[in-house]
Structure formats: C-alpha cells, structure tokens
Amino acid sequence: MSVIQEIRQAVIEGQAKTVVPKVEQALSEGIAPDKILHDGLIDAMREVGELFEQGEFFVPEMLIAARAMAAALEILKPRLVEQGVEPLGTIAIGTVKGDLHDIGKSLVAMMLEGAGFEIMDLGVDVTPEKFVEAVKNGAQAVAMSALLTTTMPNMENTIKALETADLRDKVVVMVGGAPVTQEHANKIGADGYAPDASAAVRKAKELLGV
Ligand code: B1M
Image (spheres, rainbow, N blue to C red):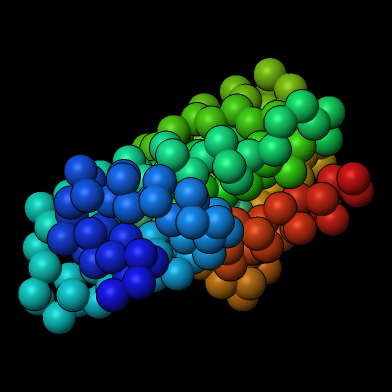
C-alpha cells in the first residue's frame, strides 16, 4: 500500500494518531502537499460520505474521520499557505447558520490565505447578522459554505440581510459546499460559485479584480 493509500485508509478509520506521522512521512518523501490533500484526505472524506449513505457508517464514525482529517490538515497547513504575501483583500468566510460542517470551509479559508487574502474566519453556524457585521468591519467579500440542503436557504437569507443593511452593492458574495451549484448561486443572487478550494481562489481574484 502506498503512503497516500495509508493516509486515506487512516482517515476513513478515524486514526488521527496514524494519519499524522503518515502525512509527515509523505512530505519527507517529497510528495506534493496538494497531492496528499486531494488523493489522501479529500478522497477519504468522499468515501466516508458514501459509507454514511450506504448505512455502513453513522455520525460517530463521520466525526472521528473528520477529526483525523483535521489533525492532518494542521500539518499540511504551513505547506499550503505561502508566507509573507501582501493581502489582496479581506474575505469573511463561514459556514451558514444551522450547519456545523467546517472542514471544507477551513480548507477554502486556508487556500485563500495562501493566495494572499486576509481572512476573517467566522466559524460555523454563522448567522446572517454576523456576516453583515463582518462587512461593516471591512470585509470586501463574503464566502459562505453549506453542506446540508436544509441550510442552503440561509445563504439567500444572508444576501437578503446584506440588502436590508444597504451593504449588498459594497461586497462580493461567493458560495460553495457539496450541495451548492452555479444554478443555486444564480438563483439566490450570489456573485460567484466555486466547486472547490482552488476554484474559490480563482473566483475571489476574478470577482475582486486582483
Ligand atoms: Co455530515 N453530512 N452531517 N457530518 N457529513 C454530509 C454533508 C452528508 C452529504 C453525508 C451523506 O449523507 N452522504 C449529509 C448531508 C445530506 C444533505 O443535506 N443532502 C450529512 C448529514 C445528513 C449530516 C447530519 C444531519 C447527520 C445527523 O446528525 N443525522 C449532521 C448535521 C450537523 C449539522 O451541521 N447541523 C452531520 C454531522 C456531521 C459531522 C459533525 C459528524 C461531520 C462534520 C465534522 C466537521 O466538519 N468538523 C460530518 C461529515 C464529516 C460529513 C461528510 C462525511 C464529509 C464532509 C467533509 O468534510 N468533506 C459529508 C459527506 C460528503 O460531503 N461527502 C457529510 C470534505 C470537505 C473537504 O469537502 O466540505 O464539500 P466539502 O468542501 C469542499 C467543497 O464543497 C468546496 O471546497 C471544499 C474543498 O474542496 N467548498 C467551498 C466548501 N465550502 C465552500 C465555500 C466556498 C467555496 C467552495 O465559498 C466560496
């Protein structure tokens, strides 16, 4: 089994204590951090989601897999985030109200930071009011993440709250997350949609003109 496959397997089994040294080993073998991320970690979470859908995994298994992934991301973060880049702009990012999934949101935040943006990470379960507050505090863009179909309407609610606060035309709104689509972004009046973290960087640069 290759070290990438071992990382993938350790995340699926939720073995944070195994995954951390394996990621260190992969890095010392010269494997690119984004290969470890995509082929090891992200692919493992895709598999975990499938096992959950098939009724083979339950919430506790998903949770320990997520913890193993978070431990691995801690090690990868310094390798993914470039140092000493001038901020290109400030982006407030968060997972919308009612939604506690934070891995994808944190990954997008990390990649945006690595690309040179200053990040206001509002965390998970972020109310429309908190996004509005962040824009009042200087965010030029809002990036919303949703992983549940039931919380996707809170993206639209946030856009409405920005309109009510008379801030909509002062901020760029981007959306993403597994169930979110370009069609949904168009429907709710977002400025942009990104299917993954790299695309989010490209979209942020395009929308902010940097
Ligand atoms: Co949850 N969960 N979960 N879960 N969970 C999903 C999302 C689900 C698809 C699993 C399934 O059924 N196959 C399903 C949602 C079904 C639906 O709505 N249609 C689901 C469910 C049902 C639930 C609960 C309701 C389960 C329950 O309690 N019965 C519950 C809800 C809790 C809540 O939020 N209120 C729940 C709980 C949990 C855990 C807490 C156990 C855990 C989260 C732990 C954590 O985040 N700290 C968890 C996990 C781990 C998952 C899966 C397995 C993995 C999610 C993940 O981290 N993916 C997930 C299945 C799946 O997605 N395949 C599932 C890896 C991550 C890197 O990808 O987040 O998609 P992702 O982010 C990507 C892109 O989407 C994009 O870039 C990222 C990087 O490439 N992106 C953006 C994300 N945000 C963006 C924002 C942007 C741009 C791009 O802004 C511009």
